[in-house]
Length: 136
Image 1 (cartoon, rainbow, N blue to C red):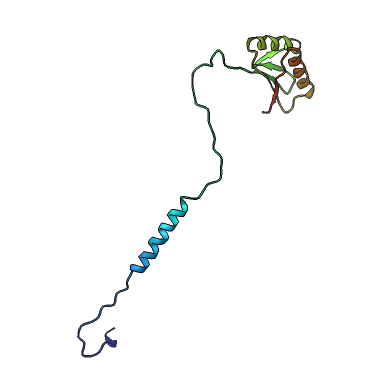
Image 2: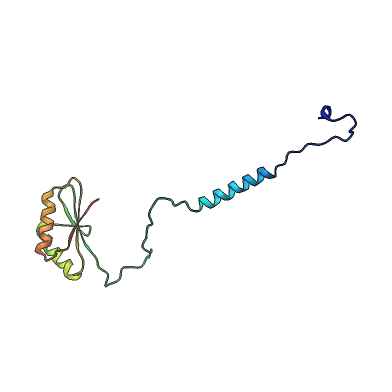
């Protein structure tokens, strides 16, 4: 720089870069990104989970009758094995204990459709018309 100064000027002029405009631009960009990021809505859905409780179910609570069909054709009512001939009587007894409960049939993928129809017929004979089929 001294080469460009006049010879009579003894004081050296220090040249400095003014960073104020650059800092202004950076802060304005920062404010812009903060404001726009708060309006971004993420895709998804809300899940309403039931409250956890370790208490036993209430006596007036509706309990469904779960009928499971194994791949080999064996029948289970509420995870207890049952004979196909006693299926109607067992469903009728469990439905009498809890008239608001439904029969839920859960069949394995390899089970025969004939067993599913047998369970549905037994539920109808027992007087239960609220029958659902669940998947594994």
